[in-house]
Image 1: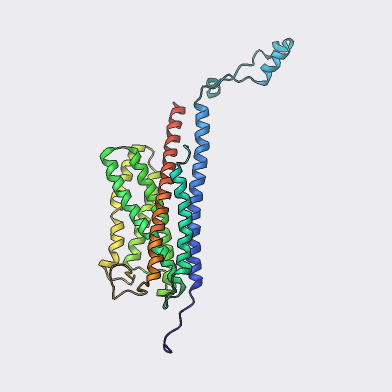
Image 2: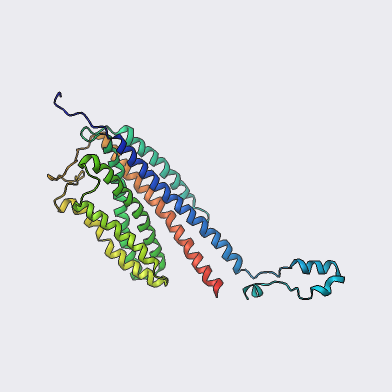
Length: 87
Length: 232
């Protein structure tokens, strides 16, 4: 018993090991969460684009409806559809 | 994305609880190893992550075979998921091993057969993802990935058996003795409890992350399909 070497203090290495293991796992889980969030945003945008868009009225057409006297000035105002947006 | 199934939610929570218990067992329940001291406690996570990582690489090889037979992209997504989760776990294995080696072997790294085969395995699968990125056609990418993962899958058993086949200083704790090994130890009953619980915990965590990663792959596929539809 007297000739036994004392147990070395290697707790610093142990803490470093566990810390790294948890950090790597946490980073991976966070990366999965972020990727899923970005993909969900992409899906909602793409689904929105896929829908046939209803004609959107510009502010000038709305104004022309309210004041028929001014409608002559806004003859060029057209409803914006998906086709015109793609062009 | 479809809402998370209840079973997956339960698995998420179970994984966290098991990880907490396993950490407790490794840090406080298992006795301190007399020669190496506290650093030996990383062994429980080292083996747990190594076991699941090598299992994942072999699973990926099986998925590759099924893809090559059936040509269904679903199997490609399963293969990618298995490799990605395994890659993360194997990185933890290598880092923990290196941290353990510093006080045990007096070096962070040595070109021992086990360490070398482990490093090669990790690099093979890092290259897998880099090479996949370079192929646009999904079918070609999947075919390439399947062949690569099948060949790469051979590195997993080679890594596992390296300490049993070659002269190495890496200890064989389970199922064997190695006279050349440095840092080996025999487990007490409490150590065994912590060890087997860590194996179980990391298996459950692997299943949980694998399932989550498959869902992510399905979502990626959905985005690609939608992009194709919109661009037409």
